[in-house]
Image (cartoon, rainbow, N blue to C red; front, side, top):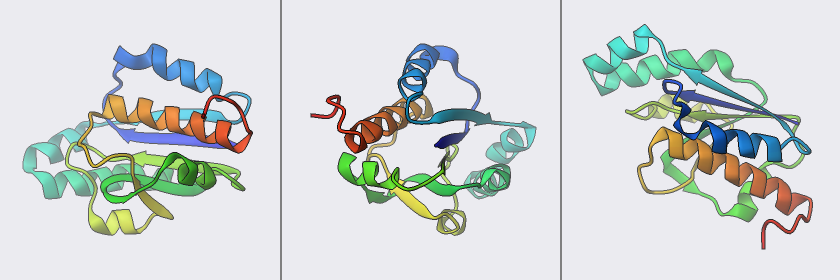
Length: 150
């Protein structure tokens, strides 16, 4: 299986070791590609305000939509670990999308196969990515009866 993670953020190396730990743990189950998306257009749009920023995020992320596309959105449905594990079943490729500081527009969110929330809390991107990777690993462990999930 192919797992893609696309996030609107600058490359932050602070959690690289932990990120790579989960990517390595996932190797028996999936190949993980982690792509940071950030450019001058996004920076400029963010300086103009939320509406322009959300538009620029959508324009930057849209070309990467492939496979079963899941957007992370704090206002969408929360799922538990078992429900999340079920999302990983019977798919060849899943792409996860993490918006920028202003979130994503409702229209853009509606264009995805699924929108979920990992938490009602507002979380920093670097934490969201680690949390997402851990839940992906947990999901595969659940689906393969691995003792990691108890």
